Amino acid sequence: MEYKGRIRDRAGRTYVVSLDNDEEDDPDQIDVLDSKEESIGYVRFDIDKGEMSICDITISEKEYRHCGLGTALLRYVIKWAKGRGVKTIIGDVAPEMPGDKEWLLKWYSDNGFEILPKRPESKISRAIAAIRMSL
Ligand SMILES: CC(C)(COP(=O)(O)OP(=O)(O)OC[C@H]1O[C@@H](n2cnc3c(N)ncnc32)[C@H](O)[C@@H]1OP(=O)(O)O)[C@@H](O)C(=O)NCCC(=O)NCCS
Image 1 (tube, helix red, strand yellow):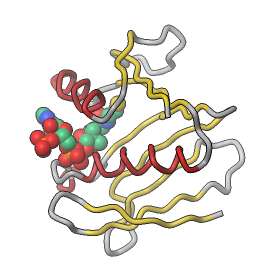
Image 2 (cartoon, rainbow, N blue to C red):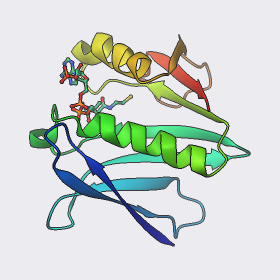
Image 3 (cartoon, rainbow, N blue to C red):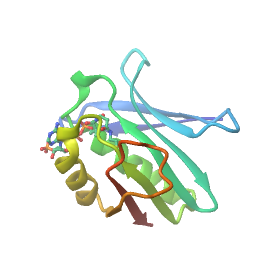
Image 4 (cartoon, protein in one colour):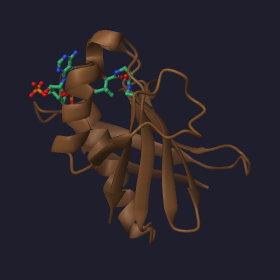
């Protein structure tokens, strides 16, 4: 099934977001597309029994960072999850660069997540903390 929506960056530019969850076993992924329909970022997640686990969120094309797109994508996936009956969102905070640690924690907190200690079961070795939100 393919599903399309829209998000806006801070300057009001519109981007299509696309969810394709054909692969039964893979985590679902919402991609942010540029005007050529190329992916410039994504959020990957699993949903199990009303719990969404965010595996990764990234604006992979660096020239698109700092424009508010990451925030728009995070807010989009929260709203999308809510609409599908998800009750809790969890995830790991795993900064790409060690220097990103402080602002990334603040970013999640500012966007409504509780910051928790790193989960012992986390498969991501660079994870520094966990996040949780009740919807
Ligand atoms: C995390 C990520 C998705 C954020 O996307 P983004 O589009 O760059 O973020 P936004 O433009 O929405 O920024 C939101 C806020 O985060 C903060 N922020 C973003 N990048 C920052 C940086 N490099 N340094 C400090 N603060 C930063 C700022 O407070 C910013 O708001 P402001 O621009 O009004 O000051 C993106 O930086 C990314 O892909 N990082 C690499 C992958 C990664 O570490 N993912 C997180 C895994 S847990």
